[in-house]
Length: 305
Image (cartoon, rainbow, N blue to C red):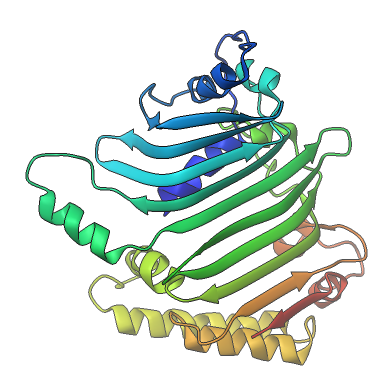
């Protein structure tokens, strides 16, 4: 899953110091050469059976095989991308707008000798997923609008995120750019909506990395999870009570109690009347006379579970 997400995010941040290439005049040739404009991606990392141009700003690829390295391979039915500025991408610049959807994606064990059983097991136990990414960035206002980021599939459920983020430095869109200290937390929250309907997304893909990150999680997983949940509940009660509505605090605590297998969908929304800076909200850099509870109330944060 993280490979697929990384692939789509790489599509969203195509950039690099490579010499600018001429954009092919033929629409299909233009689409075929798009992946070669990605810096650091092997020429055969993405292969496809068919490609079609969609107007002046889009492409559709069918029968994809995504192999970023010999040990990892993903297959997908289609990848549809639109709102592409081909000139920027071929010049090695990050696109300011992008709409992408990957359909029918599933892990495909690389064709190596002796792994027929692994390929069969993988095929029998996986269900295809779809990933959508749609965003736009305005350099003049420095506002990044994430219209849609969604992962969904059978046995996974759905995770969706929309957001409007202000004070975004254009360098953050460049994967080869080295951000200076403070670049990322300097952004401000203007609007956020998160929806999670877990049908396996957390327990199948996030649980194991979490366990290995927790103290003693590898040897005593149940105890490590219980301790982490207790610590998180203590923090929620101490830090969020008074800044969030009691119903939202209760919803967060109920969601936490049910982890790692939530029983119901979780919805989180924040609609601040004015942009809230990350340093002010998370790092304690509050304006004079404003408490943390005041800032939380300013976010108009609501949680339902």
